[in-house]
Image (cartoon, rainbow, N blue to C red; front, side, top):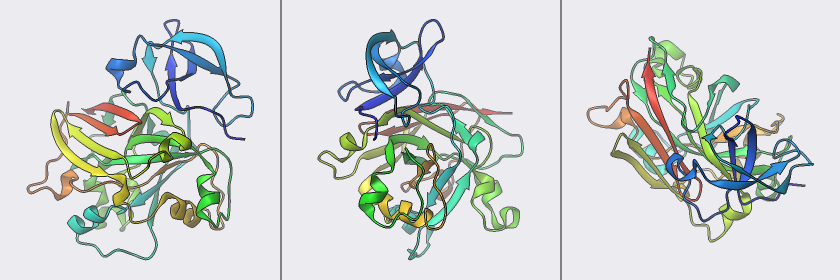
Amino acid sequence: MAARFDRLIRFKNTAGQIYYGELGLECPASKETLVGMRVKVFGGGLPWDTGFQLSSIEEEIDEIICPIPCTPIFQCVGLNYRKHVLEAGFPIDEFPTIFTKPPDALGGPYEPIPIHASCKFMDYVAELCAIIRKDCKNVITDEAALSCILGYTAGNDISSRYWQMPERCGNQHGPSKSFDKFAPIGPTILSPRAFQENFNGLAIKTYVNEDLRQDARTDDHIFTLGKVICHISRGATLRKGTVIMTGTPARVAAFMKPPQWLKDGDVVTVKVEKIGSISNVMKFE
């Protein structure tokens, strides 16, 4: 059975101990609003564990950390917003474009992102992400697919477009996106129940410093999350803790005229309605 929660926050208290807390749905979720708040905490391990239950104990949030401690893999959807496909000049395909990111790409919502010296043409890629709560394989219906989801979070599929150019990657997306910490997620995990209430898509926005770059709603998706899960679980096991990045809206840096690549010290903020905002500084080596 799925754990009962509205919105989870994973954090350290003032003594450095790590907890999951119940944030509820009313509080805005950003670093500024959350640090110092007291929340009831869960016991029983990780959110997909059977013993995961809310206690009566309260702890103070001192540091907000990645909402999951690790992931077996990222499964990512490319070109899944209609306007992004149009700006890229590609056709809409029958099946979603899937690529992966390794476990060490996982980053926290407010961690600095190390940019290796070989990485050029750095780009932001705002994403709505889903976290898988149980192992699943050969899922064939949208209903069954959605039942496999623990919850939803915000993410940034940080990309070095230099390493995405065909002569360097063999037309594979992964190499440009697989560096350490190139997938910060957070700050919360929104329950599927809260996600679906009055659902007509969630607002998703990206800011570089104070400049609004991406501004869309998730109902611009070409492939629904249910269809994506059915597709990627065909003959392959999706392990619990897998993060699915569902695609990015239009106006990535690569397609601005001229391209507006990220620079050392830039702060990229991704905001997803109901979930909150992550904010990461780019640290070029």
